[in-house]
Image 1 (spheres, one colour):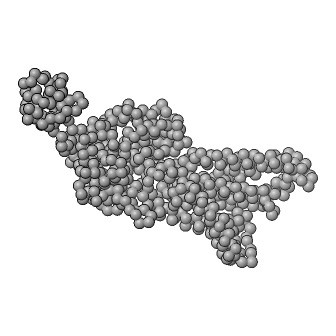
Image 2 (image 1 turned 90 degrees about the horizontal axis):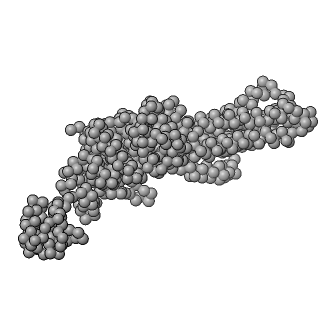
Image 3 (image 1 turned 135 degrees about the horizontal axis):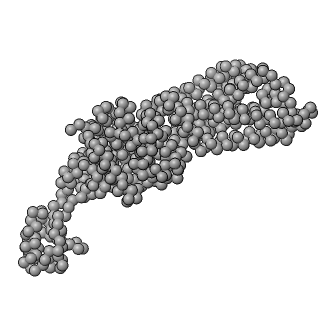
Length: 312
Length: 262
């Protein structure tokens, strides 16, 4: 599989006055294959935006290398910039110009016609407000305009830093569908986000970054398997009686507000229903306690779980 | 590069501060015309308005514009770049045009082009504001000839050039400091403190100061003091050299440093 983005040993250190320094990215290795939606996750300050900035030539890496569409960046980013659409942080436009005017001026730098700007605005649902000055736009509308400028080049690769930032739930859903459709068209969409549910439902592959290092990467299903949980959730009318029945059958279980949590793999579900049935306690619900991306994310990015060398 | 320059010129003209400054200058032109009309006595009297005084003599009327235009350019030039850093528009632009030298050069040149064009337009309007008084009974066009027009045109071009250089210098400083207020502070501190100290301490070094060179270049009159002499051409070249130096430094730093949204 061809890699669209290749990052090897990327390190970015910011040096402050008085000699202080801060490591934003620390030896990051990452490969993003061609096509589909790739989620780039990490808590605030984990180095997501810095990585994107290095990739697009906005920041120079302290060490390591980045390749975008096969060319080294930042040195030769100019060779591929026409094929890459990007949003970095909150998109900033000229406030006194209309959204349409902003896009048309950007388009002119690459010799793209005005019609493409109109189509991009239409695709993100901004046509009706396209002639209003950007200063009158809400944060969500600016975000949509940012997406429109990223789509303006009809790019092979989209690099989007928190594209759903500031959007309402309906807007987030629209963006999710848009990203998915772009990925399905064969484009590569590299999207950083902290909206884990969105990523889980939109992305084919993910990478989880913490403290400037990648702690998990791969197809979403594979990453989910890294979650340690493997248990069952059981519903019965009398939770206390059910808990006693399970303990008597030597089945490890605890109760929460509404269900029993049984520490057995899903393949042992029959043992649970049998133990409860023997006491005339009928199961009203029996399902896997599924691991979500959020569980895995929290587990991998919590301070305790970061390996010693990664934390350094 | 020409496309980039055209785009940057449009962006400069879209800035609110630039529009306000132009509007203010237009009001100033109108006010100057009204004052010229009111203060002038009837034609043929000693108080009549003489059009030749617009540019000529010891205290030309256009000298007022020679102060205000570069002053406005100082504020506008710093703001045009400083505001972009504050708003974070450089980040998005660089995802479209990653050739940093080209972007920075286009922005600095755009500041100069806009400043020069606006200055010429305003100077013409400022001069035209006095025409009603001279043409309709409150002044005279006596003395206005080809030589005067040539001198006036030269003066206007030099004022416009000074305005453009001021805008580009401040844009370059704002590009280095990435902040409008810092650029204005540096300029104010330099002109008010450094140049005055140098003038008082080492009078011969006055030949290198922006103030002296600016005054010589705008008036078109060679300066001869006890400490030094300065020709118009040398003054113009000195100013251009300073601006070019600041521009080269700012472009080099822009190429080298990381670009952040804020």
